[in-house]
Length: 536
Image (cartoon, rainbow, N blue to C red):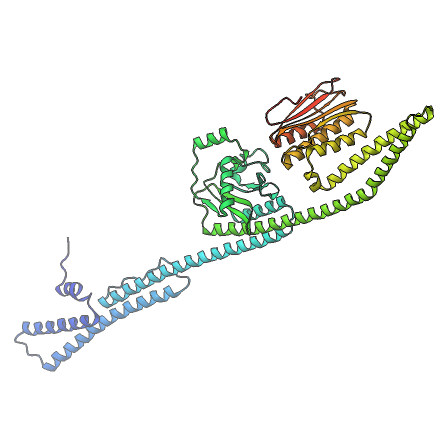
């Protein structure tokens, strides 16, 4: 049950307490005056001296004003105490300015102070967050610059292209997380070379999916088209929302089973950019991540910087390799000139002398003279074979001259060199012109070298037939047949890779190599270019 409150207390709480200090003092004076007048009226017949009434009124007014001032002082001290506490660096963020309701002025002051404190705390938190963000950016930027500096030092110490690739991908690993990072380039950095994987590194999400080394393997058709697009446009490509579907995976496995596709099956975002030095594109570096929207402006900037450093280092490595090749070529040319001017001339003179001696002794009836004539003939054959081998050696020392010769001329040199190795009769049917590309001629020549070397070392043949028939630039046939001991092609010998190398060379030029041999039945090796035809 609610208790009845005195009228004055009710008036104070409802009408006066929440007013300003001046209003409170005035209200208290009015209440005191009204109380005295009421008292005089109540005691109507009581005569009170006027000075006593005024004194009493003053005292009561002073006491009331003192009470109100004391309350204001207590409220002010409370606010000051809280303000001093908030100034301390150890003040808790949960400490707020209390709302002091001693008067309207105190209430407004404490509310304003509370709002100011809350605003300052909000601003301080914003500044702290901004400071943390700037600190993190500064640390990231410092780390990036340190990585680029280490990359520059590491790349400067490398001259091999594959070592450069490993160094660049390792630098990326120090600053970026990725599912895979790979670098694609054309073989030997040639403009028309086949695009292969020069190097790669994988993250934990991709590493388990790879069962063998992928270095040197080709791209899938889709990735090859992306490479050619980047190479031609010379602009980076970013896909931050890669969509994988079962049908795309199935088509990739059925139509184009490139093993390198395993690097990108967990990718949800990727970025690729050309490794460009001036107008030359030396390769394409690609970074994949398992999360979408991974490549922001900062990562793009870092990857671009790494790509620029890598392109510059690859260019220097290419120039260094060309310089070494020029030095080797100059040395080979010097050796070839010395062989031509000294050893070759001596062999030629010995061959002429042996031929002259054989002609002088030929036809004599004396058995001893006939024996000497046979030796002179053998000497002539040996020096002729040595001359042919010397010409081949000088051609090998000068690859530019070797590549300019037709296959017919190269085959004739190889056959002449084989004639001087022993008593073997060779029947050669060699087309003088072929119209084939330089790469095709060189591969066919290397196959012939391997086959003739096997005949000389292993076959024990007395007869050899070499045929080189050309029907057009895309249709030709090379056959080498001997009557030697033969062998079983199904039986492989450890350490012997001649047949495998010949098969590999034939595949590279799109030719078909067939081998027909059996123990005691000789060996027939044929390389068919284009559609088969009757070479007889």
